Structures are given as C-alpha cells and as structure tokens.
Length: 151
Image (cartoon, rainbow, N blue to C red; front, top):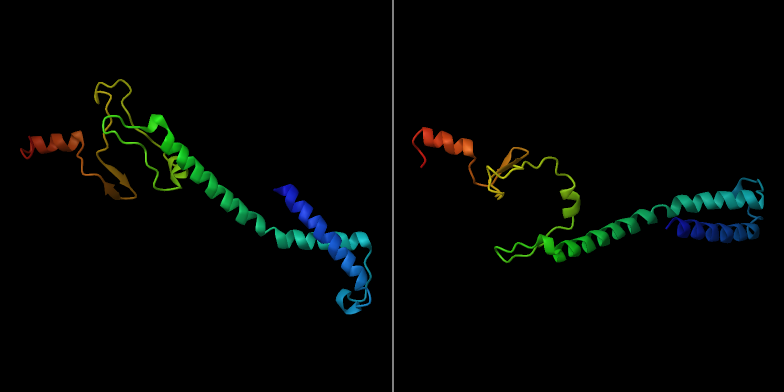
C-alpha cells in the first residue's frame, strides 16, 4: 500500500513539475520567485502526499471489514464451535465479534470439576450495572432456603 502511495505521488509530482515549467510566465502564482526543478518536485510531492494521505485510511477500513467478514465465516465453519447436545452450529451475528472477544478480562471456572461436574451454564452476568440472566447463584439459593422461601 505504501509503495502504491509513493508511486502515485511521484507520478503526480512529475506531472505537476512539467506543468509548472509551462506556467513560468505567470509570476503571480509563485510570488515572483523562480524555483528549481528539484524544489518544484519536492514541493509538489509534499502537496500530493498531504492530499492523498486521506485516501489510505478509507481503503484500510474496507480491508478491515473484509477481514472481519472472512473471520466470521471461519468461526461459523469451525467444527470445535459445534454444540452436539442441541445440534447447533455457531452463528456469528456481529462482525465485531473478534474484537469483543479480545476484551474479555476474566473467566471464572472450576478446574477440578468437583463443584460444576465439568458443566458450565450461564446463569447471571452484570455489565456496567445491568444484570443479564435470571439464574440465581448458590449463595442466593442458600439465603432463600434459610428464609424458607426456596426448596
């Protein structure tokens, strides 16, 4: 991408340098000063570099979206993401899934499996004060049992 950027800028600077030699009679454009060919080339190269630098991030954004789309296809086709008990494959509904997966800070699990029987079920999660899930924790169930409200 950088090679294309510099190639386009060099070609544009050479074309501008050639057109400047034709406009040397227009002193109002240059303030009455004459520039050497090298100075004109450097000035035009810098001008086009600034003007064309805005085009690179747009193509980068398109490329990143294509990468996210292809990654979502690979996630959906991954056999390790298949849940056999319910006969359900992974479904990616958001292209930003990979970025969001990278934001996970803590995953709590029981390594021995004595408490969970090696089965992890989603019960409840709180994100920024918003509670997701209706499951109760073991502590809440014990409190309800002690108060006579639960089984």
